[in-house]
Image (cartoon, rainbow, N blue to C red; front, side, top):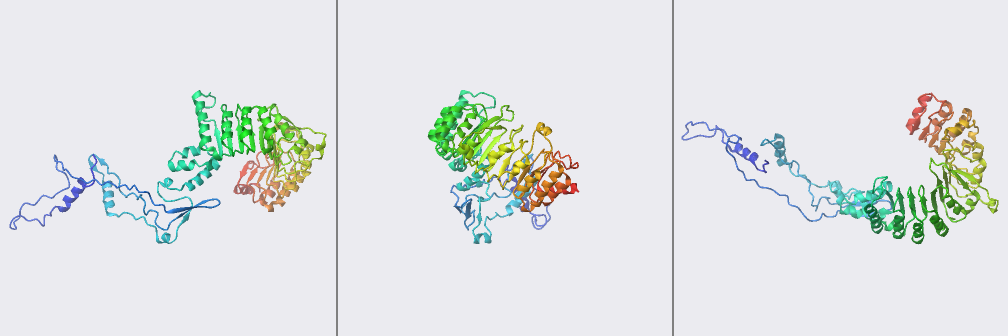
Length: 573
């Protein structure tokens, strides 16, 4: 049983306070009568005391709170400027009164702790929600936070919510984040529905468990979801990606192509069932499409070939996986179907047995003079020469990145590398992992003078075992010591003397503070040569010394961070 306010506790206090004392009460003409019985707060047995208590109800104010801020949008942020008046003035919210907890009963009696809290709560006055004088004089300027109210999400301006959601979308993507926050309240739903947040969307296969077939009802739900998103969210869509779809791939591409006139990038990865009709619809509706990624997907090669022949001049980025049917795509590119191509990547699976890819480098240089990034990942390019006018080509004059990395052996030689890069003076990144036939003299002869990243590690045991000791690494570090930021020579069998000379060049250029990553795993680096680099490189953040047989025990590991690398010096002494 729970007593209302003003119940037995209040009555017992009144009887105790109003009871007369024995020294002041007299009976009849001053004679001594019987001493009166002292009143106690205990209730007589067998009797019940009925009390009337007034129930106080809090009045609810239905008026809307007064807006005490203004929103101003700058170049990269939203500013919320609060007014000089109190943020609680005119608001329907008041802070909860302290001690206003429900009193609990234990076997018909009130707890003593609750009694003390009740008494102290009556004596204290309500806190006043007023700003200090300094805050009243000048308006406060802050970003994002409106008040300390627990319902701040309902009072934040929609522009601020969109800005916050945009930061999350850039990091985690629009789906499923925007779908979840849109169910919080009406304000959040309105902010999450803004087309500005739906510029980049990635849809994975999340309707059924992997390996199970789709039921007809599930397939219809997938189509309905795609239609609803295209009609209500994708009006400003630019980048669209599908991952691990086995059905409805063509349907999704058709709907997106017809409903998204601003589509620039399309990624179909690890999907099957992309038909030629989908590429025809892309050609009819997606006039702004610039990037196509078809890696690890099964599609009809005839459809994409027809698309490249008719609309290849608008494609700037193209990525696909090497295969017997897909090699015709590279032939179409070398014929000049994509003259404005800037990014070209051809890869294959790590467990693939067929990795040989015929490449007509000279024809490709003439067909794609604007190429800046050229990647051939885990493939073995077979260079074919064409005795035509292509001999007078200028190469790739704008090329900035060349990647020919592989996990197996490579046919790449110094001559082949020169045929690709003889005109690439702006090269910044060179990835030759697995290219064991490349020599230091061949690298030093390249025309690029400001190389920033050189990856030249060997990551397969068979080639390392058959390799003979090399020399001349100091020519590479001497040429690019002023610009190298990342340097990888893992498992390269250079002599200790050659490594010491190479590290000396890097140490002399340490004043430029450019070197950030150094991989010496599996090399014959010695403590004196290593100490010269570590002492002077203040910007080094990554150092790999695993499997270095010439180093003492306890040192052969990976170091991350400047502090961890500095502790290495104590062990090298």
